[in-house]
Image 1 (cartoon, rainbow, N blue to C red):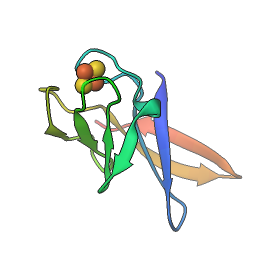
Image 2: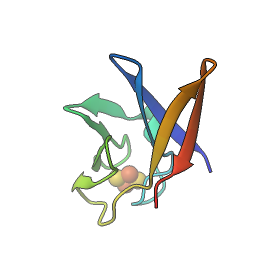
Image 3: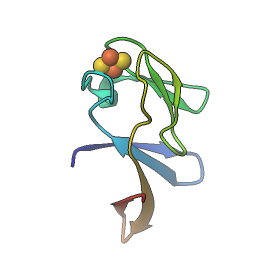
Image 4: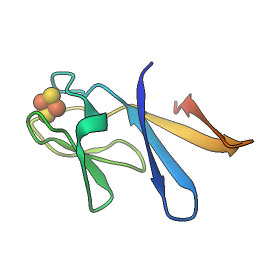
Length: 80
Ligand code: FES
């Protein structure tokens, strides 16, 4: 699954599914604001920590991943 990863201060990394839950917009081309990622197509915003859809038009959260950094590589596992 394609993911978008965002590195925060302190080497904390958040990862969400790349394709927006609304109409599959490319979240890696979105805008970071207030701990959220805004989709570049229609403006839905998803919280980085858990993928919750803060604003629509998306009506579903974005799949979120648990992450860790091992030997300089970011590893991500879909959160269940
Ligand atoms: S595709 Fe992301 S808000 Fe529509």
